[in-house]
Amino acid sequence: MSTATAGPVDRLMYKPEEAAEALALGRSTIYELMAEGTLRYVKRGRSRRIRRSDLEAYVNNLEPISH
Image 1 (cartoon, rainbow, N blue to C red):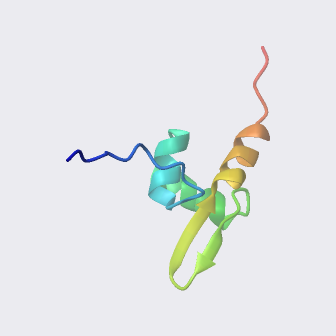
Image 2 (cartoon, one colour):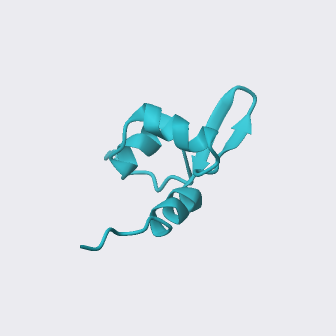
């Protein structure tokens, strides 16, 4: 009898702490971005979740600094 170990889950939604880790930002920065409307999120009860597509949109909209 073998037990299969599950691979990493391809998440569709992230907790703010998980989004912070994924973006290499601080947790408070994520909450600031959500409060100012820069980073979209969904709210279910008291929980906030950030869709993967909204994380990707945030990153894609960042302007690179050119020197």
